[in-house]
Image 1 (cartoon, rainbow, N blue to C red):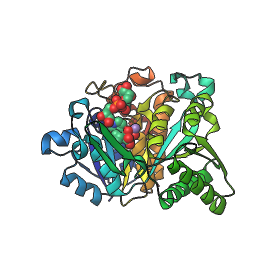
Image 2: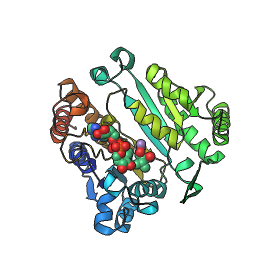
Image 3: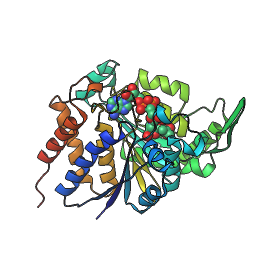
Length: 354
Ligand code: NAD
Ligand code: IPM
Ligand code: MN
C-alpha cells in the first residue's frame, strides 16, 4: 500500500493539510487504496522541538515514502535565523534531496470562480495555464552565496543539461494540452538567460518542432499574465521567475490559497500548495484548503490513482458550484467546513467500483 509522508509545517500548513489528508484518505479508500499516512515535523515547529528545521527522522521518512505531501513552513517568529537554520532552507534541502527539479503549478479559472478575481471576469474566465518552474537550480542554489558586513552575493547559474531536462518536461506537457510553450527569461540582460533561451530553442527544434514556442522577457511576461492571461498554455521558466510569476498568477483565480503544485522528477515526488504559512490568518481556521486538497489530487495522479484524483477535483468543482467558499474568495466557510463539503461532494460523485 502506498506510504505518504505528510509534513504539515507552520502557520496555516497544519490547518490545510488536515483537510487535504482527510480528503486524500477517503478518496483513496473509495477506490480500494489503503494509503499509509505518517506525519513528520519540519520548519519552525521542528526548530522549536528539535533545534533544527529539518530533523533526520523527517528526512529519512521522506526518502522512504512513495510521495510527500507538505503544508507550508516559515513564520516571522523564526525570521532571525540564518543559513541552514532558516525554515525555508529545510524546504529547499528537501526539494534538492528528493531531486524534484520539475515544479508544475496549474492555474485554472473555471467560470464559477471568475467573479472572485480582482480582474474582470470576462478577461480571466477560462484561463488554463501550466507553469513549469525549474526547482532545484538557478539562483536558489548557485555558489558562491554569502553575506558579510556590508556585502552579500548570490549566484544565478544553469547548465545546458538542467535547462534541457526542464524544457522537455514543458514540451511533453504541451503535447497533452494546447501545444504551446512560452519560455520566460531575462535574456536581454543575463548570460544565464541567454543560455536558457538557446537551449530551449535547440530542444524545441530537435525534438518538439511540431509544437509552438515563443519567448518572453520576464517583465513583459508579468504584464501579459494580467493583461491577457488566456494567451498562455504552458509557461516554462527558471526557479526565481517561476516563484514570482506563480504568486502573480494567483490573482487570476483571486487567491493564492487555491493553487496546488507537484514537484516531480526525483527519487520521491513532493506535493505542496503554492502558498506559504500565511501568518496573517494562521490559527483562525479560515485558510483556504483548496491548494492543499488539489495538491493531494496531483499526488494521486502520479501514484496512478487518477480516478480518485478526478473524484477530488469533481468534489472541489461541485462544492464551489454549490456556493461554498472560504473568506479569501468572499465566502464564509471555515477551512474544515470547506474540506468536508469537498469530501462529501467527491464521495457523492464516486462511481460504485465494479
Ligand atoms: P504567504 O503565501 O504565506 O501569504 C501571502 C498572502 O496570501 C497572505 O495574505 C495570506 O493570508 C494569503 N494566503 C496564503 N495562503 C492562503 C490560504 N490557504 N487561504 C487564504 N489565504 C491565503 O506568503 P508570505 O506572507 O509572503 O510568507 C509567509 C511565510 O511563508 C514566510 O516565512 C515564507 O517564507 C513562507 N512561505 C512558505 C512556502 C512554503 O512552505 N511552500 C511558500 C511561500 C512562503
Ligand atoms: C514557494 C516558496 C518557496 C520558494 C520558499 C518558501 C523557499 O515561496 O514554494 O513558492 O521560493 O520556492
Ligand atoms: Mn513562492
